[in-house]
Amino acid sequence: MSRSVTFAALILSCLSALTAVAEAVSWPWYPTGPGDVCKLIAASVSSASEVYYPNATSYDFDNYHFASSSSQLSECSVEPGTAEDVAAIIKIVGATRTPFAIKSGGHNTNPNFSSTTGVQIALTRLNNISIDPTAQTATIGAGLIYDEVYAALEEHDVMILGSRATGIGVGGFILGGGYSFLSNEYGLTVDTVRAFELVLPNGTISAVTDTSDPDLFWALKGGHNNFGIVTQFTMDTFPIGQVWGGSVMLPTTDYDAVKNATLHFWNNAADPKADVMVGFTAAQNQTLIEVDLFYDGPAPPEGLFDGFMDIPDAAQNMSAMTVRSYLSMVQSAGTNATAGMRGYFDTVSITDLSSSFFDAVLNETTYWYRTLASEVPDVVVHYDVEPFLQNVYSHASADSSAWPPRRDQHFTPMLIYYGWTSPNNDELINQVMQQSSRTLTELAIGEGQDVSNTPLYNNYALYSNPVESMYGDSLGRLRQVRARYDPWRIMDLAGGWKF
Ligand SMILES: Cc1cc2nc3c(=O)[nH]c(=O)nc-3n(C[C@H](O)[C@H](O)[C@H](O)COP(=O)(O)OP(=O)(O)OC[C@H]3O[C@@H](n4cnc5c(N)ncnc54)[C@H](O)[C@@H]3O)c2cc1C
Ligand SMILES: *[C@@H]1O[C@H](CO)[C@@H](O)[C@H](O)[C@H]1NC(C)=O
Ligand SMILES: *[C@@H]1O[C@H](CO)[C@@H](O)[C@H](O)[C@H]1NC(C)=O
Ligand SMILES: *[C@@H]1O[C@H](CO)[C@@H](O)[C@H](O)[C@H]1NC(C)=O
Ligand SMILES: *[C@@H]1O[C@H](CO)[C@@H](O)[C@H](O)[C@H]1NC(C)=O
Ligand SMILES: *[C@@H]1O[C@H](CO)[C@@H](O)[C@H](O)[C@H]1NC(C)=O
Ligand SMILES: *[C@@H]1O[C@H](CO)[C@@H](O)[C@H](O)[C@H]1NC(C)=O
Ligand SMILES: *[C@@H]1O[C@H](CO)[C@@H](O)[C@H](O)[C@H]1NC(C)=O
Ligand SMILES: *[C@@H]1O[C@H](CO)[C@@H](O)[C@H](O)[C@H]1NC(C)=O
Ligand SMILES: *[C@@H]1O[C@H](CO)[C@@H](O)[C@H](O)[C@H]1NC(C)=O
Image 1 (cartoon, rainbow, N blue to C red):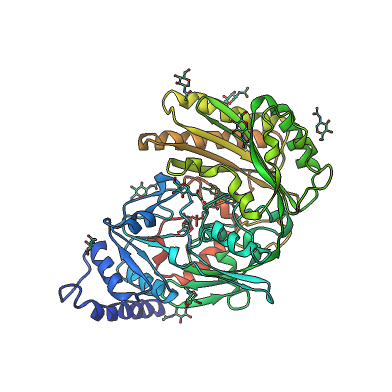
Image 2: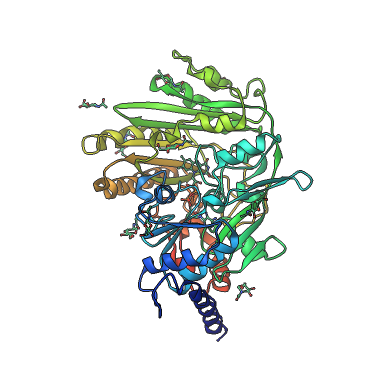
């Protein structure tokens, strides 16, 4: 009963907005499609916000994604400038049941996760940054990309946890979990959230903290866009100075040395200020090794990265490992080179890294590149391993976040990335990626790794993975929280992980 009463109230509160559009549209007025809904939104939001149509540059920006396969042509886009306007928009799309999308940085590579043919909500105007030195927090608007946040914070010698590459939005990154260069030291990015400002599906603006609503606070930490639209995040800050590291490409003749160094780091590293990523990229008939090293300080301690720094390096590429600012570290990797191509991510979670598994990762890279190259000559194939420390999940309690659903196991995500240009190849690449991640999973199991119940990282996982493989034992509680805050399933009108 209360459900239908509340829904009626919701429709009424939305219809009251109709008086505002009596002049914008002919009256009596009934929304007959997303185009009318765009007009209704335009007439309902304040001057801080704007609605754009396909004739506007901002419309292109609002629909742009890192992977072009994640973009669609929306009926219109809207850039809300205040939380109140976000509330007005969510009430309208909810009451008219209009498909919509929420985009922060647009870097999710799953189609439809932050794009739509309906109303594209681009959060870019929610770009405030404020620092509270006493509370040791920063409050950041949900439409920022991390580059902007890092630039502002490092001026004050503080940092928040965030992406290891350029261009990533704070919204999707934080709501999925967030592996940072600082995760070995301080935990996942969700472990460092103090508060969310959230517009609930019924349009109420709510400050969500561990004490205000522990269930919702828990669910937002990994549960993505199923509970409303986050307008700002209040995050723990940590002191930062100059850091050390960089991202370099090496020829495969260095493979044995890189493998030795990577396994040595995996088996021995204990310094939480260090982070390592090692990957392979095959493109344009060439396979290169990518090594990313990071240290939270102006120089790594003697010996920590020796296996890496001793790599025979004809091109002297390792000299790019140097003291630098945090922002420059994040921008040093070449990840933006494939921006605008079609692209998917997928992932495999591993609990150990053996010599033979590392060999198999290189083999998957070269095997699938060679297999695809005749049909998809421009394909870019990338695999990496991310050897986080044993205690990376111990910075927060076991039931503090919806993702990961368990913290009692040392697992780390592998990133699998394919880029290409023709939409005709989407299905082929999807199938290859599924097969390849199965191959690596089975290999890990064959080596005795207990990975059949290890959570996949939702921010890397390809859309064809079932939500059970990511959320596991968290699913029941996530559904209960959703039933409490979104009994109308308004958030199902937006794409993403749905449970
Ligand atoms: C080049 C590259 C490097 C990466 N590096 C890392 C890394 O170092 N560590 C890591 O953990 N991940 C990394 N990722 C993965 C990244 O975390 C995800 O792609 C993430 O979803 C991107 O966030 P976004 O805001 O840019 O994405 P978007 O596509 O804008 O959003 C992703 C999802 O979150 C939802 N969402 C976004 N903002 C909100 C909001 N305010 N309220 C409600 N829902 C919202 C969207 O609706 C969508 O479903 C990387 C990705 C790329 C492409
Ligand atoms: C763009 O399209 C909208 C909606 O059709 C229209 O109202 C607006 O005047 C157009 N703007 C320009 C600059 O053509
Ligand atoms: C951003 O900051 C300005 C100036 O302090 C303030 O007026 C505005 O309301 C803030 N916007 C949001 C969305 O919080
Ligand atoms: C994305 O949505 C479109 C409809 O807009 C649909 O045709 C397509 O199949 C969806 N893609 C995926 C991968 O779900
Ligand atoms: C919206 O939902 C919240 C949480 O359930 C509730 O506290 C609030 O009263 C609701 N607001 C309206 C206008 O119904
Ligand atoms: C590494 O060396 C190769 C040549 O072997 C060069 O093409 C490449 O640009 C270098 N990369 C970096 C990051 O230094
Ligand atoms: C890759 O190799 C093929 C076959 O040898 C050749 O036709 C093609 O031009 C090469 N592509 C690049 C980018 O070098
Ligand atoms: C492997 O790396 C370790 C640690 O740096 C080093 O001691 C050892 O000599 C290396 N072995 C080979 C074969 O390179
Ligand atoms: C990344 O590439 C896109 C497309 O080429 C470009 O628009 C964007 O500015 C680039 N971002 C950065 C941080 O270089
Ligand atoms: C390389 O990978 C392919 C595809 O998974 C597999 O068929 C092949 O046996 C692998 N080769 C080796 C040497 O492991």
